[in-house]
Length: 539
Image (cartoon, rainbow, N blue to C red; front, side, top):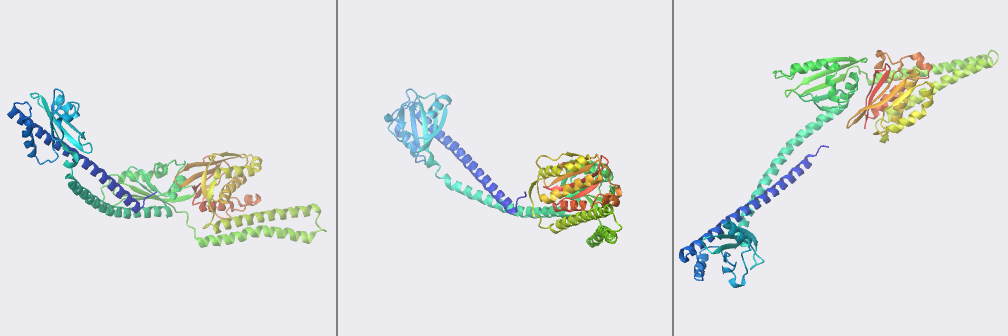
């Protein structure tokens, strides 16, 4: 599902703020680490001056005379919270401390910075002070092997870094400014993307409602976009069921298209090359057009040029056909009844009377079937815009239907191979779906012939449609009739159809019911020699 422009902007804004916060936290941490290192180096400078003072004036031996010198040295520093401690390496006692009385302080040899200084010459630590437990200090210790003491200096962490907060605030404002600039840039970028997305949605809408099959491929012949009609035409043109829509260009019927693509592959002409071809299959003519774009991608369009029927002509034909179909049984019934009235009982025996009445009943049954089929067809057409749909298990409908027609199947010695999954859910009208398969079964039972095999298969599905095949290995239909068998009242064998009680409306009902489910249907010669119906139903 495509994201709206406002959703994209919200995501971009959240991401930018998140990255800004992460960067600021990282920057603050980095600045503090660098400042702590700089402070430790400053403290080591103090330690070195203490060692220089004691070594120069007191030959490296600490005594009480050093105290005044150290006090004067500390006064020369700007740090008001600078703490200096001198620790004896013999017993860890404190010889000098800025804040506390030395005798009150314990053994300092176990202090981390002192231990590290005794081992490496320099040691560091950051922790709360035992003298001022509410304050955290940065410690730096140094040890000179020529002396019998360790010099340790420290500064309050809070006091030292109190002046860094203003600079941090400046950095915060700078980061907020950069974030605001980024958000403004993203807004204008997303506006442009929104325009591009709208154009793409218009293209997709055009593909869905186009009256021709359209597909766009990249330069490696991989499918980018295709509408439903393109997939349907591909299945009808191909001799086999396509597993993927992009396989259509590798079918033998598209050999000329492939040759055009190969020739235009290295074309340096600035114009977009175009190729047109015609494919004839199962009594239908398809117009194929291929356009190669400058980026080597290409578009293929397929149009069924045999469908050129006007709505007014259909209405005229329907009116004429209805009058003709009703005229035959009505005239027959009238003729039989006139014969009975004119000759009974003087010139007609009981057997003759019974024969004429049976003929009248047969014609009236045919007339009744015609009325029912007409009513069903008109109902389908009338309810096309507001038919109620719900989630339906098509497999359950087929199982119930097979049980209903089982006696007819046994009588005609017909076997059924049902390859529909146990559960196949789609959004449709149960009554119309029943009509589709009932009329297809009735057509096969009536015309495929005794002992044939019927095969029902859902051979493919995608995010929008199920693709079905309903075939038999019976007598089949000549090529010249394939593109007309869905017309109202059209019969391949008029005499045989009337004899079997056919009305010529069953396949018209099937087609209209398929259209109600946003599908398409066509007929072709089956691989087994019979007739195959290929159709789609929206999921």
